[in-house]
Image 1 (cartoon, rainbow over the protein chains, first blue to last red):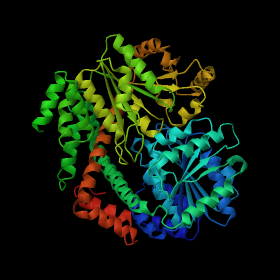
Image 2 (image 1 turned 90 degrees about the horizontal axis):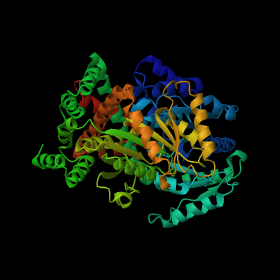
Image 3 (image 1 turned 135 degrees about the vertical axis):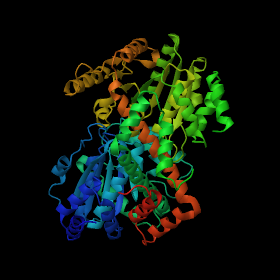
Image 4 (image 1 turned 180 degrees about the vertical axis):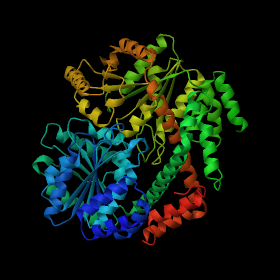
Length: 318
Length: 318
């Protein structure tokens, strides 16, 4: 690991937000040496609790996340926010820029906000979000709020890394059933009916309760269902109380610990392997060559992949 | 490749729907030999046009897809439908079962319907959908309609494999902005305002037009915006006309061909790698061992992955 990384890590440990910010960017970009840097950072982490916030677009997740952050800061905690925004797979830009978020929380030194967008088709957002959470943890944050934009598979993966998951529903979107469809139901620790002052909010509340009644796996861990009006700060102190209670209740989510570590290991290895192979493939233009061959109908992708695997992973036999 | 696969491929080529069905299942399940089977199937494909249908939950995508299939069959085409349903990452079940779909199209021999759910947290739905589309193509389908459930990143990936993408919007969901957020905007070739007899439909129509006006990348390829009431078959013949016109217009989507082949290659490689990694790691319980070590704080995942990479890929130096 070069000196540059060590220097950043030292400064980050001394509390430099600038160093933290650069560290996050460099790890996100997979700058050379990032794995070694994470090996240094990892042992410093382990104290922060990760809270995932998900729900359909327009549910007010950003407002609610900001409000929770503010509430946690008022209670003396240090908070980081990771806004995972899959936005456009083409432009790669993040719609919720850090700056927009900052405007709302600019005067809270205790909150570090980071927006992350998908990095092209090769994704890995899930892993990146975990890495960034670990850096924030090492920096000394007590809570890291991970907020996702949608309720797709990616988002499920992202929030699965959390210690506690909030699923935000709002009136007028038929969220009950949609959340169920996207597999969010199973990972929700708390349901929040946001915009609870709107027409239809009670219906959403009852829908969620009805869904929970139907779930045969629910035992004594039935997720609470809360009401908030996040943009008026209504219900947020109560929500934070419930979050803190759940996080300190013994055994919460511990059952997932194994699964999370496994997933993290496998995801990390997969991403690294893939990156190395693509690098190998792109070198000397061999990827371009096989693409042309497939285009002309001379080769098929399946045999090319098999050949490549046989060549690169001689030690592993299928 | 064992005889079983060859036998299935032969029977599929002779038109056996039963063989087709079993082939699809076995490829989806990654039964041993599936890569070799796909190598046989690939050269038989290349004629079918893939049409992606996406949009938010509740937009009526299934009804619209079924309606389009029916219309295409009436015009003498052979049609396959792949319903991609990310449903639950835990239960793995498909909410829209083949049977439910079949009820609507049961008497159309020319339509083959396949529902696909995500296969656990390790995903790969995108690649599986492409494989199944290729098998349906090889079987002789003229059109394969790929329908997704949501508008997340996964869905974007799935429909990117298509020759043409329909984005379905409906009144009352604020779809305009949401579609934009999920990056659907860029991949839409046709926008459809479904449930166009409902209040607010005209607003959605105008919202989409306004979005298209704002998009600086639009030139002469501005996507048409159509109105349908799919459950009453209204607007479907017109929609099919537009689809067929776009598909035959010269140069449509050809610009994407390279990107699609690259993505397919990389996706396939990634999928295969993942399988190999897990197999390699789970053997002799070594994955369990390192998970425990991480849990006890004795090791960190980054150094374990780096070690494993060095061992697995002796030929590649970073």
